Image (tube, rainbow over the protein chains, first blue to last red):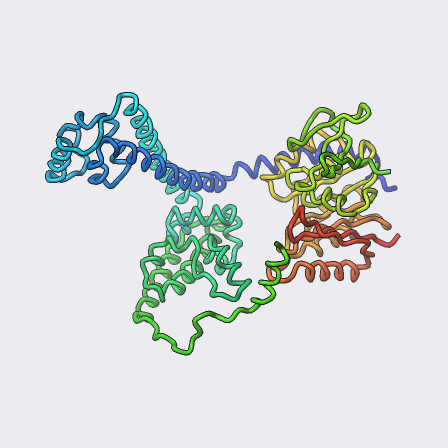
Length: 303
Length: 219
């Protein structure tokens, strides 16, 4: 047996390896992009939570004052009013000042207060609704802070991606990829459909049409574009994000040319494909299935 | 003699391994006493090696005193049982690339077991952890080129006559092909590299589209 295999030697190897492994783990968990990934996911969580909580508070308070729920569309704004007013009798004109309502709206709310069709609410019930409203307002504040953090962190960590994709979309792509390093190593085609994995694999399996965009659909240039341009626009943006991520990761400088190149290219797409493509009468209603039969067989077997 | 114990409880089959780190759990598994010895139950739904053994893989593929190169330790569930099996006289060299899961492997397994050496490295580069020749290479990494990676590691570290245990995840090699076709292709690759495949065990119902391939290097 070679000397590398002796027991004393291996104990020493183990001691060093443990140390090196722990060092590697420490180094990996202090990466700023991983904090950004957590933050964007916390932001998305907060949005869901906020929506649920504020909707519930509005629904509940609506038993007491349904007209207000009708007139104030923003549930978080409603929660703020509930917090300061309490029962609808507590709703004074002063309380409605400075909340961005028009004179007419304030007037309408006050009129509704006096002849509300809502039921009475006990102090105990109101206390629960207010606690819920307070939670919603708190989440909302936390959400805004997270948003600021994501903006700032993207500026520091991936300024070029931010410039091309926007801070939140850039951060979501990073979260999907697993960090800036991984995003920088992805091909643009993968970036284009990140977040649409389900549709992609369905397309591969059945021969249906592949998705044009995943997370990128949230990009304004994509979802605001007419349908027939979206694929081209998503592809172009994905191309530029791939370049931007690589510059951010490997070079770390800001390159204005990426954004300007994107804008130019988007402009020419919008110009060239202004009109919707003519409907192609010979196109099949349903695309041909490539592996259809086999796929169906497999499904049966698995069951 | 293998140190793996088979048991049946309420009509379900279980595996047990003697706990090398007495009194500690790795993944909240059940600890039981048998003849004064503490054993850890080995969950086939969480460990592909346990699943394979319940589906016919001979338990003595890994024996007491063996040295094992374990690629893809993840959080250390299966490696902890391999560590139990090889015992104090054996060795587990555990390699995991992802720092996130390696953290749990190092904390819960490597720190507490003297026969485990951890590496946070890429299994594509065996020179980083080639500290001993081994009797068994166990490879569970979900990569399209996992078979090539496993073979590379066998060339670098597997003793003549040693065993390769390769977990093939058909879905990470080719999502479209029938899993059985993928298994067959990977087996061919091993045979072309001069290994003798001794068994191919599909892991259903414990895992979907997975198989464990056992192969021997000529002595």
